[in-house]
Image 1 (tube, rainbow, N blue to C red):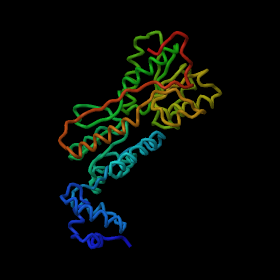
Image 2 (image 1 turned 90 degrees about the vertical axis):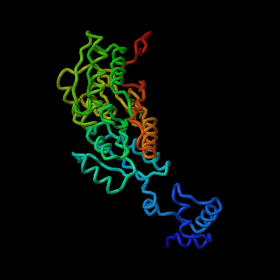
Image 3 (image 1 turned 120 degrees about the horizontal axis):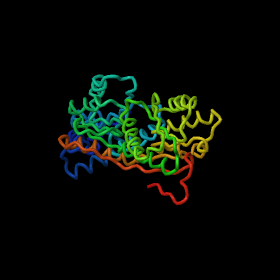
Image 4 (image 1 turned 180 degrees about the vertical axis):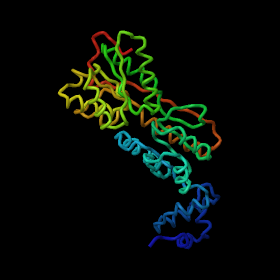
Length: 338
């Protein structure tokens, strides 16, 4: 049977309220009493009821972890690091699938039912109305992998996707490709829009290079494979910036199904540097998104908001870098990336 608070109090020779205060964050209790209670609790194998203590503190220590792209393997890494990071801070993740939710009101009601202390939206494709709804409701929130806008008043942690587009363009130019393509995710996603913007901007300085673009239906393997298969029915580019690793892997599958080789016939450049991209059979040249750093910063921002709800809105933007592997032709001798 579960050990009760009364049993701990009797073992320690103190009142039940003293036991309750010992296990209530911020409550006042003497060092002597705390030692008695903790010794008795350890001897009896007592664990405080977190849900009961939340009635006293007004804090559930529960954080809503919200996303909508469960088809992209990179989010397995994201959820793994987020959940372990939250638990290490004494917080409890409540994972919510946003894939079939079209309006923020339903999500807001759901998370209010659980009295979450804060919300992390871990997605680059969630409409801006969702994080704004939580801000308006006074619930601490951070939008991880999102696009920052001062007018939204939402804390954002992520990368400069426009600069990633520029890095991709410079990478393909340095390798001498004359026909390049952008194969992005959904056209409505801000990440797709920004990566395409940076890609175009950088290539505008190279009018001799022919540029094409297209968009996949989702950030998924199947969408990348389908879009590349469509492109191969015409005249494909010499190399594609796919804007996402899982799109890149789908595109590579379509290329090989068509009897072509990567990178000999078509070069592929991804973005994320998810674990699968390093596998020998994939060996994807990609742009690394610093996911561990983004997650650590997101946790710091959400905890800071809970402790200080009035803190100023901020954006923490991390740089990305090229990871050289085997899906692009090598740099010509004497040519540098810059």
